[in-house]
Length: 77
Image (tube, rainbow, N blue to C red; front, side):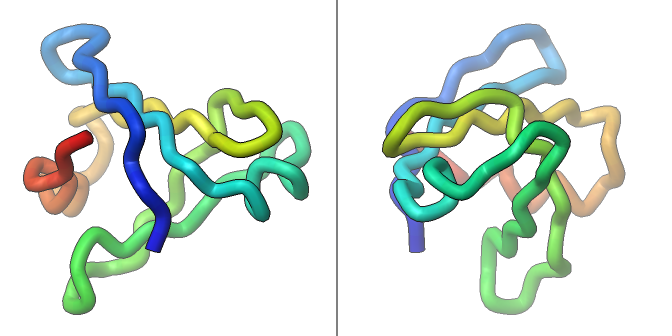
């Protein structure tokens, strides 16, 4: 499991997550996405990698996306 370093509310329904994931960050390419499962029983959720550096990736989540993203409400930095 990867550590969430930062969680920022960008707008009322938009949240940015900075996640420590060195292997993913080094291998990422433009246009790629990650699959997350907030809980063991959750559906797989594809999210586009918005940014990153050598050790972290940044994900921006809009709550206008499918309702299954409500699973992310428990996530904290």
